[in-house]
Amino acid sequence: MSHSYANNHLHIVYSTKNRENLISSKFEPRLYSFVAEVAREQGIPLIAAGGMPNHSHLLILLPATKSLADAINALKANSSRFMGQQGIEFEWQRGYGAFAVSASHVDQVKAYIRNQKEHHKKRTFEEEFVAMLKKAGVDYDPKYVFG
Image 1: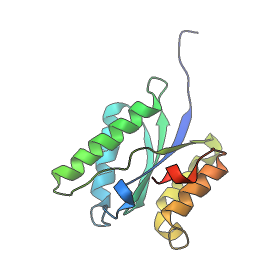
Image 2: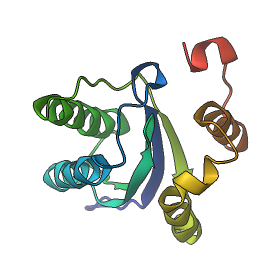
Image 3: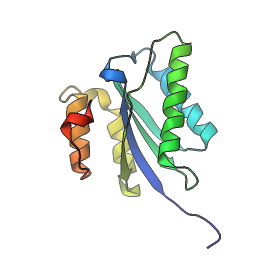
């Protein structure tokens, strides 16, 4: 086969260092606008981006030519540097969650990301993330998830 074909929709979740509330609602649009620009430069279609003061959700279409680790590293490293350039002492937590999304569920995940503030009236980030791990069937050790 002379071409590579892929349709890898991924819901990516990562938190700020120690899950501190570092992303103000006032600054959030600038952060995700910058993340979109980095994604564009990296050739990573960004379908949705949003989150809360202590974590981010991204829905991307991972190209066949990019590794997941390289894509996330580019997005996190550049956005962390951007926040620092804005005078915000900022760092992302090490690690991330990445969950496959079927094409038929892309709209649901976009809505989920768009409605983060509503979801978090009922559930903390920690509860949300553990629920996502369980739903995806990811084995995890609770003492390392937020260590």
